[in-house]
Length: 70
Image (cartoon, rainbow, N blue to C red; front, side):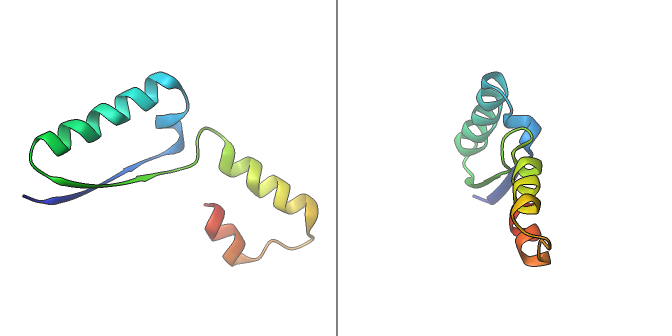
């Protein structure tokens, strides 16, 4: 048994069909006898929207805040 880390970008979970595809890949990996860790980015353009909002409320978005949102 292996530990598999799967990372899915925001565009892969941007709609219901994408979420279903990702879920099936996770299930298939687990059924193959692996332990699975899943990392999912924010859906669609959410990251960009969060960074835009941060820029609206402060003159300087710190590198730490930017890295948390990315």
